Length: 342
Image (cartoon, helix red, strand yellow):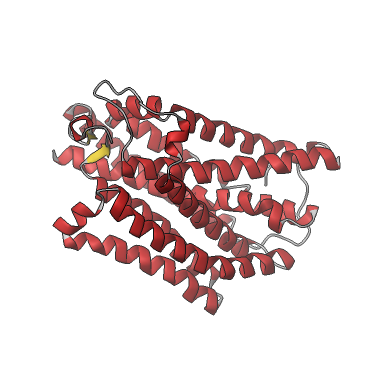
């Protein structure tokens, strides 16, 4: 049981890191048509994430791979019941990656406008759908004992799912606006900084409504009531969200971005910790729930995987920190329109 629990929280950690890193990519892509007033602005926005976005998505592959290897039953049921939503996310991610590379291939306004639209769609779609998907997991997915999904794509768009989608989208847009403030200067910096300040109260209101709705739509608070010390996770999340405002006032944008990261990681762990030991609960019957204990791989597999993680994940983290430091300088006012996305 110890190995299963360790892997449950490693699984949650990988999703949290993915949301923290790729979240600002989604946010900038969502803001792209609104803050990118000129072609120069749009090139600066793309170059602010150009060296990082594809590396950030490695965490998505890792989270999916861990689900497959450590919890194969969860993987099979999750990717069959949530097939439509996950395929939409996949197609959007492909569209976004292609758009970054193709946008400046042809110096034609209509060509660029087409790919600019694709960048927006490829960013806002996964940002929103990840929130919808995870909120429905917190709530429970309607599947039976055979893992058959008893709903449709539109079943996921219930009030709680839509609220979760909006919360994730706001978190990522805030994250993206702060990152733009860190990497840019001039007009685009001023617009990003102003937007972050205006967006903050909306984010807080949405987060409060989500917490209240969670009480009525889910059983996440049961673990917190049983183990009150877990409320420290919620406290850390609140500190992160309010830290954004504090550091914005001080104009310490990197610290504000770090606070936003804490808010995203805390939000993820708030939900996953409330689920434990469930990983993929059924809204039809609790007996059908997939948990860290009844859906895991063999102990030997988990031990081997744990050794691999202990050896290689620190290397990946050190490398990614180095990349972030390498590309931490402000982007010039006149970025080059290179063929690459950076």
